[in-house]
Amino acid sequence: MTHIPPWPITALMSLCLTLGMVGCGRAAPPGESSEHTDEDHHAEKAHEGEKHGEHEEGERGGPLHLAQETQQKLGMTVVPAEVAPLEQTLEVTGQIAQDTDRLVHVNAPEAGTLKELLVTPGQQVEAQTPVAILASNPSETTVQVIAPRSGLVLGLHTSVGASVDPLSSLMTIADLSQVWATFDVYEQDVALVQVGQRLEARSVAYPDRVFPGTIVFISPQVDQHTRTIKLRAQVENPDYALKLGMFVTGTLYIPIANDALVIPHAALQRIEDERVVFVQTGPETFEARDVQVGSETQRQVEILDGLQPGERVVAAGSFHLKAELLKDTLEEGHAH
Image (cartoon, rainbow, N blue to C red):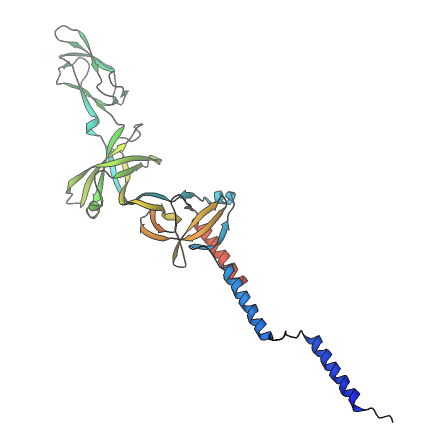
């Protein structure tokens, strides 16, 4: 039997061990351990994550995209943030009445007999046009009675054949292009109301119309039974649409601040205890932005920080963008 010396076997085992180490992995460069390489890798990933989450100050998430066709279907409206008076509103009810300063009685210019009436009640007349004819005494000369102003003939106070004189009222003409609206205001709200404040009147007869007006009188007396005070507003009525005695509702606008940056209250949303608006950055792109809010009314919100005058925000339909933002945030959370 042939005997093999031990040294070739030892050399062969050493060679196999060396080749096995090369095949199982790359040796670390001198002075650098594999543990150090893993730490660098994790640091790079963390840095990338920080960069991915960066946004401009006040912005919340990335841009939101919504096609114009979809915006129309959702009934979305976009309005500019503007510097304007911040106003509280007060709703009141009332009734249309005659503005006595626009009411005239037409008297006979001289004594005589009324020969003819040229107008009827409810007829519209123009200033300086004839409304009646009389025969003067004692000459029987024909005299025209002239309308002193334009308006509506509210009533006739005499008849043909009657004897008249300069103290006799033949008819009443009222200019109804402006009318009074009298309202009842509760005692606790009187401190909010001042002469000169603007008002908008509405009638169920004209649901799509607004009749602007101004408060001209506040009664000094409280009704002991209703605990209300009478207000009188002068209301525009250019086409005589509002009739005397008609019931109306009024919205009083009470100023809180003269020069505030305001947006509609509907534009404001709340996300994670923050007040948020959606600013239009393009025809179909929007961004969510945190804002600091000041005074609020039923209609308006004062913006102290986060918006500039002229920036356009979503008013009606802003909750649709809120839902889209929350959905995107949830999806990003699942992805990570």
